[in-house]
Image 1 (tube, rainbow, N blue to C red):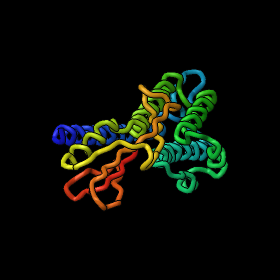
Image 2 (spheres, rainbow, N blue to C red):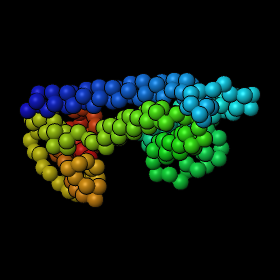
Image 3 (cartoon, one colour):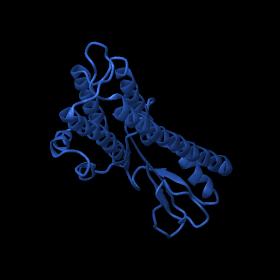
Length: 239
């Protein structure tokens, strides 16, 4: 059983790492493509033909500002997603990239990365209405936003889906199979577990703990650490 549990845990951990790495690589590629489209497809159009035209001096200066704003917003999105997944406050980092008024507008949002994408779409819609984005090019920008949203959803899925608790318990029980006494108790340490997964709603809660009453040692072992031969004799694990 211990070998099976270790194999499953190692396999599941590597799959989560590989999946996350693929998603982040896709985000890098999508951001590069989005930036390239902003720099090449965005600009004044001839109203009669719909073809790009040479901007005048005022339009050229404004075009540089618009391109910089869109590219910086994409950079801010990537940083905000990184901190969103880590549970960190993104606003100090965003203040170095975005204008102060835009950072202030994001502070009331529950999902800051999604709010940044919403701002980007609204900005592009305004540019399309102004005649700076061709109607045939607008879906390309929309597809980039959709791909970015899919990537974010994949990253959030990895974060909110823990390894099955039963395998963690089995691993600890197997590692301490020589113990003279093993008992399940709800009084040693109670920790509420609120798993977010498709199989279980966010309101579902279970409270339990596992206690190995084997020796005099009282040192606790967190469930996210791998049990080995040096594990303490008295183990309280909670998830």
